[in-house]
Each structure stands twice: as structure tokens, then as C-alpha cells.
Image (cartoon, rainbow, N blue to C red; front, top):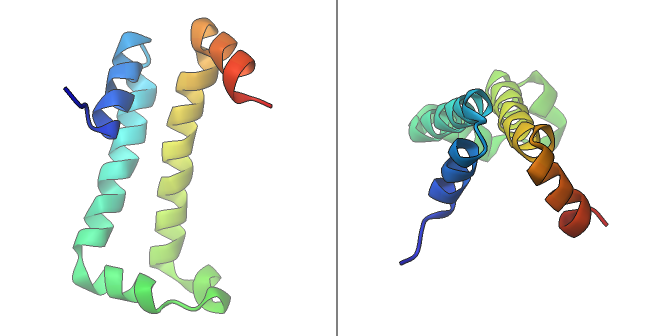
Length: 93
């Protein structure tokens, strides 16, 4: 049976007792999806030129959400001693 990627990530947060980090990561992801679900905000991102990104409130918010999601994942990978060992051994080059 195949498990969707987000379910696997959620399971990892639960299995490693990183519920707070998981809640923060998935709240950020949910907020990101909420932005993409709004036609006007999605269009603003789609039409955004790189040179205008710093002035875009939508882009700024999406960037913040990405950082929040990343912080949750990093907490999962590096705050748990077992996972930190696995990351050090198999992921970090």
C-alpha cells in the first residue's frame, strides 16, 4: 500500500514525538495552499516579475510560510537524536 508523501512526513513527526514542529510545519503548508486556492493571490504570484518580488505582500507571505515549513522539517531532522544520527550518516555529504 502506497502512503502519500505528506502522510509519511506527518507519521515521522508523530513517531518522533515532534508534534509541535509538525503542527507548525503543516499549519504553514495549509496556509500556503490557502493562498494558492485564492484566484487573485495565485494570479498575482503567477504574474509577478522577479524584480518586483520584494514589494509583493503575497510573495513575502509565501516566503515566510516556506521558512516556517522548513523550520518544522529541520526541527524533526535535527532535534531528535536518532534522526540526527541518520541524517548525519545518510543525508549530509
